[in-house]
Image (cartoon, rainbow, N blue to C red; front, side):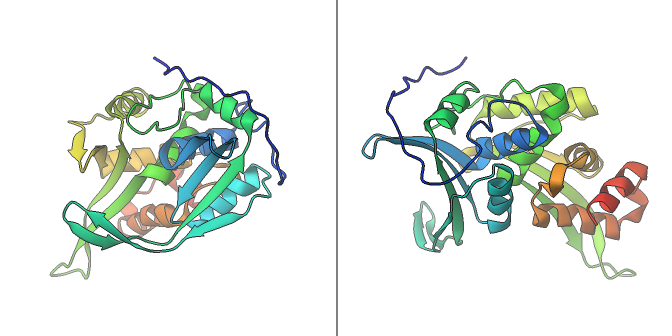
Length: 258
């Protein structure tokens, strides 16, 4: 059920160029950016400054530059310096991060139609995505709030033993992850045993053979190499260490990304 949000009919002023119609029509690129926004972005109604804008956040400058490029945005990236943050278990130093902020009442309104609202993290639901764009949307979400992890160990006869490959999706919304799990069940015939409650967020986890299926799903027909390089490289390293897992579909993806 979509949360009702009253749109403030304020005017606005845009100093930078952008394709402000970007979210009006489905494309591979739009689906990816929408997925990333669901994970590591927000729409903001800044009453004090009478502006409405969308914002992308990431520790990876590379991916925000790619998103800005496909949106034909001239908006600059802002840097948030590393800082000390209080945590329930003490203090830790955050990583330097980057912000892409685009002021647009039109985009704000378009994103409301997908069910995105300010302060969405705990209540967001999986949007209705046309089937042909699902992998691009989920790849965008994965690049924002997912991770791939390669568990390795030192062997006796081999220098490195690969124990398992993990793919993890994180969300503050249990409903969102349940829908994502159902999609993987229907599309890839893979199942999850449970959704983990981890540090005020939920996690959907898949391992090795299921993780390989997800890799093939995520990176199939990837447009303009719109993906986060460091996460892709984890899969690439896995296939280098476990070449017996490579099939023709994986070869096609790796060749396309070389």
